[in-house]
Image (cartoon, rainbow, N blue to C red; front, side):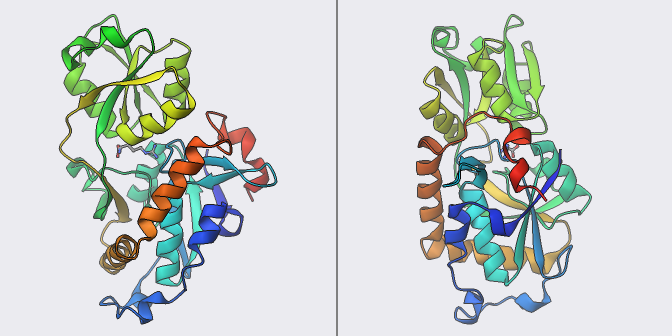
Amino acid sequence: MKKRIAAMVLSACMVMSMAVPAFAEEETESSVDLSAVETVTEGVLTVATSPDFAPYEFYAIDEDGNATLAGFDIALAGYIADYLGLELEIVTVDFDGVLSELQTKSVDLGIAGLSPDPDRESIMDFSDYYYYGGQSFVTVKGKEDLFTSLEDTNNPSYSIGVQTGSIQVDLANEYSPDADIVSLPKVTDIITDLLTGNLDGAYIETDVAKSYATNYEDLVLVLDVPYDVEGGAIGVSKGNETLLAAVNEAIAAALEDGSMDRFVAEANELATGEKYEGLLEEETETEALTE
Ligand code: ARG
């Protein structure tokens, strides 16, 4: 289900990122004419994300007990909106929805731990990398010994989870083609099914698996999975070259001025702390935030 969430009600993490002075570009001599950036809605930067992916994007609990969007992708979205002098609007969808929102140009950006997979280049442009990380095969305690190599995962008796639309589908098809590959809309669904025994293993981004493993001790990362594209980039509405250039400039600034490091540290802390929302379903938890 698609939800539009006003920037005003975003997490503390967001609010902090908004403390970055607006129009910072005036001080840093932007090489891009930021006033020429065109967006889907004038004056607004519309960003699609899939908040099932701690520490990139997830739900945390604010002081009033409400579920709020958090994570370093959300903080980066706020930074970029500020950099461009635009208001931020976040659209939450499942991950395959992030891809289709970009494809239909309903949003300006997709910020969702997106791997710049060459197969996606026909439906979006990619920014420069803003984060680096690899891939893992994950299982639960007690099943570690079943998976000592990627060949072990390629067995018809195993059910292996992947997120619909993700590059993890490709990894499963490559390394575990004989297994029962189960594609689920949310990474949090995959984790639930691993914990309840419905799945034997799953392909998940390493830092995401580590984050959930901190909260769910039964999860274990057992294998590193080779993948060519080791990192995350922003999906930009295809053909919007001024926006792409401006986003790359904002990413460079966030990496340069220490903001990105701070966003990652804050997200990691929040994702492993008691304010974390865990696997609870967004549909019921975020009603108060939706318009
Ligand atoms: N990096 C992977 C991909 O691009 C998975 C991203 C999933 N993101 C999410 N927010 N669930 O396919």
